[in-house]
Length: 606
Image (cartoon, rainbow, N blue to C red; front, side, top):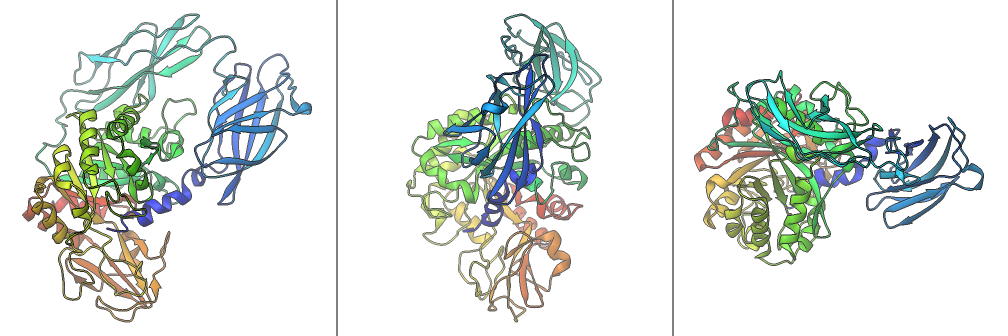
């Protein structure tokens, strides 16, 4: 528990957008007779090379140019050439130098810079207008239309209506977007969409176009579930089968939302926690904007089989999750905030719970992706205790935060939380009012893994996710059974407790003893970090040699690993059933095999 998400979330901070953005050239937004595009030309880990190119797309010369953009906090321009670059906080401005201000029709100029940090530019303006050529000087784009309302829903059709947009020179027509893709253009403020699939979830929004063919912002989205088809969400009494999808998994791990489909996992789960949103300045914040809503997916990597376009209103993982929900209407998606790396922000959040809850609601319900999320998950590691940092907000802070979230999100949203599994007397469960907070939550994800690992470099070797105690366990109370018993004892209902499964192993090297309790010389080598490795790798690279306390271990050469297998998961699910628990969850999808055998083990036995 001390180290839950230490490898996973910590690794994210090393490779957020850069790994996915090297060499990317993207229209950076617009100026009616010119465009500006950004290219990341190189990446050397701690920094990157960037280049802006201004092109005159009009019929007369441009005499000067100014580009403005925003970088996320922590990303900066270190040095620049062929332009004068200044900043005010995270807002950056580049102006031409004397010799490259004039650009003839059809010609272009470029300037370059060296940057530091993980971010990519956003909110670009060229000479005061947007940078992709869609806004004409002196002619404002139309406003957003009202959020559509749905009526006359049948098995195969729905009628949509919305309030009109406004424009200084008049609205010409509206694009109707289904699941982020344009399905029709109409001149009125209503549209009937036909040819739909019975018993299926869809999301609709609209976007206005003026007489100059400029498009305005996209409206809010309305969710529609067609009748018939026999496809309904699982009854509320069913067990929860939830997995974490990591935003950074699309980079080095090349694990996309589509993999949930190809592995068969999407049909076997009930919920997804999307990890992680940041917690900073007392507010919920975007974790990785490029992965979340900007990355353009190819047709091959898209759930729908259709490639993203540069001008569609929503891209990235959020759009892929929207497509997944359309294909699997039973799946609910929660946005998880915090994790090992970003839990330090909860102390400030606890100082004003109502303001924090408002910021989270505003972000989760952003009109661009409001239809994607069905709730929020709080992963605070750990309230009134120590994780990566130590929190001193007091034992009541946790309950107060959860009460504020429930008050803001209301009864129709899921509000959940990941918790410590420290079952020791006076341990982390005792540090906060988990019992009092439980009344505001749908369930707790009890992180019953990472009890032991190679942060104790010399050992003793021990399974990182023991179900029960065993002779020689390094610390009493560090088991799944102890954690669940502790939560029950303080008054948390069993149905609000989910047991956790790690789809990875933890290991040591320099080990000669096969059974647990051996000495070691340090952490075993791992693909992404020492001491940790995915199940899909370990099942063949270091096969199981024994079991202890309901989990497996493996001794191969001088390496010693512990991890869960389909067989041990079956045992743990049977135990969860006898305990009356609400279900199970796992960290995370990327550790499973290509055919989802660990997800299947949870689904088949819970």
